[in-house]
Image (tube, rainbow, N blue to C red; front, side, top):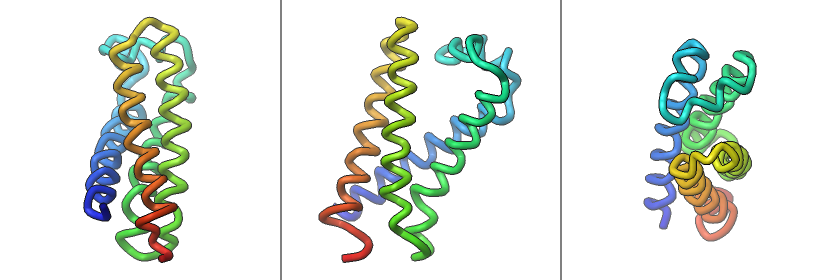
Length: 127
């Protein structure tokens, strides 16, 4: 179980880092022209960059606290925040009729919920 939680956190961290890097570095116009990025037309560039920064922080928070042993409780807290972020993303994509991306967000949400449950419960770092 511990291994599955580490793998899940690693996968989500890579996904969050990649998404965050793209959102913070690519121009909004380029994002809006890419599949799944059409939603950026409806928000300001600052909001896109802020979401990207949150994703980068999530990548760090899913792995670094446990890997260093410094405040490992931040791993499930970060996973819960990722659940909220993905619920919002799935809602936005669903309302836009982008059901494939909404389903992908829900898969990420489920993985984050599994990590939060596992790290708050049976495989807690404090136990």
